Image 1: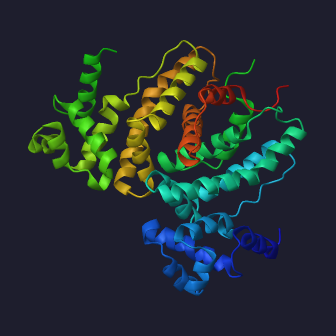
Image 2 (image 1 turned 90 degrees about the horizontal axis):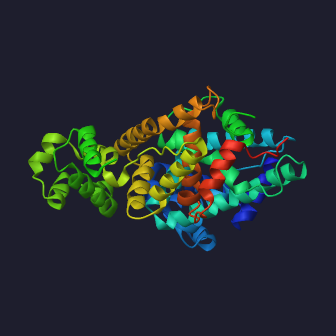
Image 3 (image 1 turned 30 degrees about the vertical axis):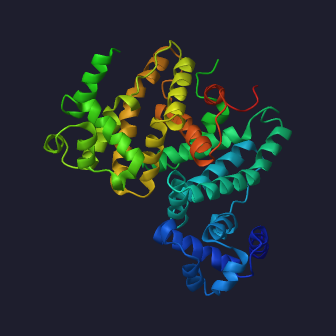
Length: 199
Length: 199
């Protein structure tokens, strides 16, 4: 996808102004630096160089602005992989998830935001929407896998995504352990082939 | 396990005084009510009816006290299931995890505590210890499964626990969706049998 097209889609998805990407970047940077409590529309206006009244015209609250940034920001962009096989797609998806939850600068933002569901009802709603948006973008992976006969027709895509994303979350965020390079491969192999002794 | 023996182990593990369970309950209740910032050794003393100096003698800080409560409290107790099969053990473990993360009163405490890893370095250390303690208690499930030939000798128990726990965390805490009654069964079936089309 071209830079230009991604930019346009980001702005289109959020219904935002033309400098949407600068605004989203400023929003996420401020969130990472100051937390949700310290995030203000005024601060985003200063950081992005966009007039405060312009921001308020598009997003009536900092919650609405952050919601748009989470789904529209290029630094959190998810382009669903299309490698030709379910295994390849899931390994690529796992690597994207791993990067998102462990590699700076996005990781700090994403982990802080997702972690905040446990203590901010307003952020909890944004996280729910963020994950629903990502799941919608992941859906084609599973549609193609079913069409290719790699997954049974009644397979549950959300369960598979939850297993993959959950393994990264528990290992990296909760246990705070480093992820080996082959962690994505091993997780995908287990989820696709099963852990039990064959036969 | 008898009530008495569990009590004794709880106190023994933490090296705490005889009223350890009342103290741990008071600690977790206050954490759920007031968050980590609002938790104080004085508050626990008042709530549990145990002298403040006694508490400080055993635990020099509120962090140490909470760490002991997380691994020693009866309401968070984990007795690893022993059903005779790996599938039965993992389904029982999944139900325990689901209860812990979704059923009041423990769920509020556990989710708030685990979620706080993302914004409190002190709590992050306690969570790491809490999960390490639980994993040590889960280990026999996998030793027995390998001995029975249900898992290959090189199977990775922590990866399996991360998949199970992670699926609950993502679905219930991050997506904030209700868990169907058969969620544990379906997760365990996927992890043991694999998701891909057989053959």
